[in-house]
Length: 228
Image 1 (tube, rainbow, N blue to C red):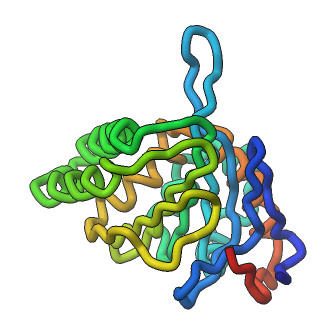
Image 2 (spheres, rainbow, N blue to C red):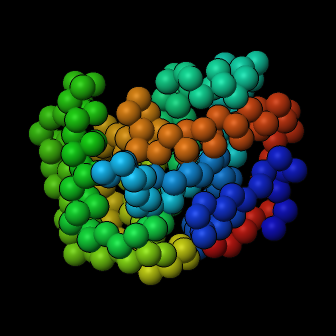
Image 3 (spheres, rainbow, N blue to C red):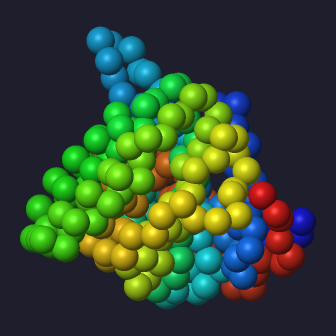
């Protein structure tokens, strides 16, 4: 694997998120935008549930440069518009969610879908088609079982396609388990991770810190790839 010097991998808990991934049987490579843990405060204790990494197409940096290059990491972190430009940007996102503790698929997707519905309703984008898409994502997850180390992968495309893969470890499966075509839902999945009410502030901070460095690199390129 060879990458631009500014791209590095990240370790979250015991899980390694490589600098670049190329899904098997897929023509694109993605660089690691940022990674962080997702958890909740339960009875005064921070309980960790998942480790999340957000990967992006190479052209994401060029797309964001003009608007955000002059900003500091703190300014990026504090700007909802910055994260919305990632969520809605004209480039693919590839999201990896590796489980830190055991989760039933039905339990996991219940919270994900609730968060997505709440966001879409707040944006006025939740209608009949989105309700159908929510049922599709619930159906895809309902029989899954996620002990520690298992992973769900999401491919979010600008056209609104949401591709799902499930793995018993951190390896990207060759084929997508399900494909859901609904732009508001596709964007809502990432919005709930890094948007206004994020499930992972640590992921948001990682994205801001790393993009500050990426945006300074006028020759940002993914050189080669890393099969994962």
